[in-house]
Image 1 (cartoon, rainbow, N blue to C red):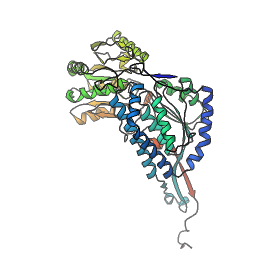
Image 2: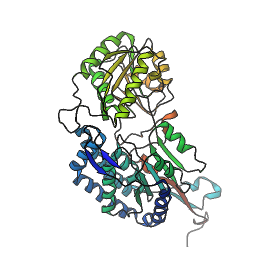
Image 3: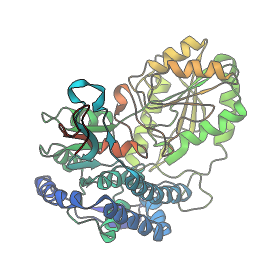
Length: 466
């Protein structure tokens, strides 16, 4: 497969694809390699993962430029992703060094008072990791580095749209000392990913992608651990006392990160009717200052979508919203190749598809007016998604009460919901997925507790030990 820049169509490289019927061989090699990798002391595994972090840092500028070109994200965002990935790799290794077991309270029961029992975390086995195109390196590290730390073997399905940087980072892990068969990449299309997730010998599947893909994986007849980070149509609620000086820059940033292709971005802006006109005016003014162009150009604030087909989908979604009662307040809402300039929709009815489950993966700011806080919460929760959300209000108590009633994996007060530092347990509710990712949280997802008991080890009560 030839990989080209969505901005310029420049040829960036080629990738040898894995046939669907060859996936089981890759899983088999990982299964054979896993016991040996797990048998290494945790300090040794941590040292290997730390060396991988150094390797990522060493080539950070080269890989940031490659990621920018193949994904379309602007270079500053690509640089941040690579730097963050290196830091997260190192942090996972440091967490591994500090992991300890726990002594269980056997003395609390008469029947077990003479026993000693402890619990520790052990690997799952072979973990399939299926990556999206929008944050491929960060999520490779989030999933695979944690899985490797815990002694699992990993089979990675890179995104077919932008696999080159992922494959380069996988090689960096190999060069750092991860056995080739303990971390295997299977580049390919959807059939390759489907074949991987259907393998009955997998211990776990960690997938970031569409809700449809998540449902397909969850329908497997084989029981295994599932971590699914899926779609989102997240709500930002602006109360009547919202500070627009604070809200507008955050909303635009949250909706234009990765050119509008971020799962946790504020795709539905629910604004109190008294603020709606002013908010729309400010959003329109803000987006006119965004330069759309080549992601490597320092002047660009927004690059292309991942493909021309993706831009055409966004154009069709905006057209459907307009046909259902929305108004185009700013931007031209037309695709130009893979580029789609930011636009603002106002007066979007709560009955429109975009106000429910039509997730627009592009830089479209959708403004839905409401009359009461109860209406805002109801509209926010009418979506079958629930990844993250946000509330803007000068009244902290009011904001927290609304946040508590929002059905989502997390809520940010007075900031974009597109919030994912490593210390939060990131993940969704309802149709937005299962499980949580984050520093420490992913280590738990990629392992399981196992207890060991020494029976009748304590001296009988009233007798001195020998």
